Amino acid sequence: MSRTGIGYDSHRFVEGRPLVLGGQVIPHTMGLAGHSDADAIAHALTDAILGAAAAGDIGTHFPDTDDRWKGADSLQLLRAACALVGQRGLGVAQVDVTVILERPKLGPHIPAIRTALAGALGIAVDAVSVKAKTNEGMGFVGRGEGIATLAVATLEVR
Image 1 (cartoon, rainbow, N blue to C red):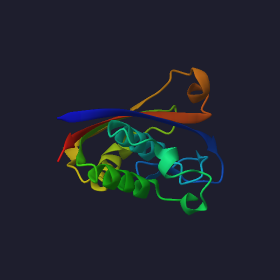
Image 2 (cartoon, helix red, strand yellow; image 1 turned 90 degrees about the vertical axis):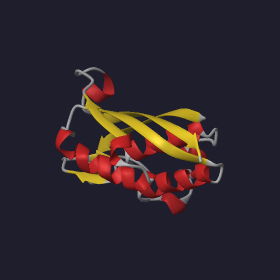
Image 3 (cartoon, rainbow, N blue to C red; image 1 turned 135 degrees about the vertical axis):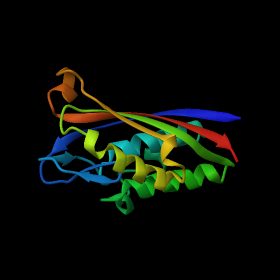
């Protein structure tokens, strides 16, 4: 038996913060606004995993009103979500992520992102898909104001 969940996250760009995506610091002139490290990939994946297990969402487990999560490494939150679904007898089988942004170009960073995510999820790299797309100049993403991320996670009974 398998279960599937979908996650979404978006953050606006701000100056003075590093850009963290998939646990990797990506060279760019701006980072993402957020209570934690604002890793939109990890956040969307966390929501997809929790959703597949019908276990709420990232805000339920790691609220931005709780100072424990201020500046938190979002891969730690992702690991915690995996542990939570593991307690329910479920494990991550495969994930697929699409990052929507105009700049920076993520292509050169995707192998390292996939490796970091696989390690956090406890699965093989070949079960982690990460793609980057532009928004063709449309909307807040197209204007370079921020990024959006979609994720799908498939869990299996363990």
